[in-house]
View (tube, rainbow, N blue to C red):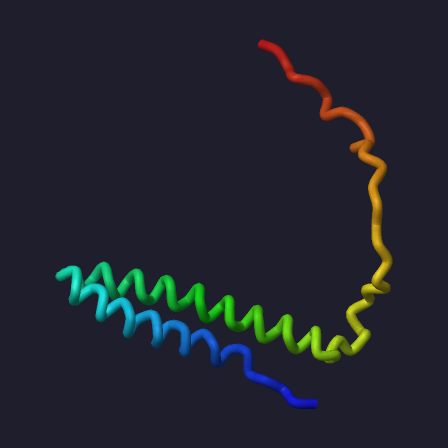
Length: 90
């Protein structure tokens, strides 16, 4: 099985976001704001890429079968089993 290092996406996203943030910060004449927004957006992008890679790895058949999930669908009748106890008073 081929293992991919999912943690490598975070620095790539932060680096790309910082580069874009520096360019935008220079264009807006506010470098501090551009860098901070670039790091924040890049971190989110890196985490999203990690999630996408993880989902693709599981979708491609690397589920393993050891997670304990039988694949059964659970349904609920709509009843919450009782009330919350009322509203209280003064």
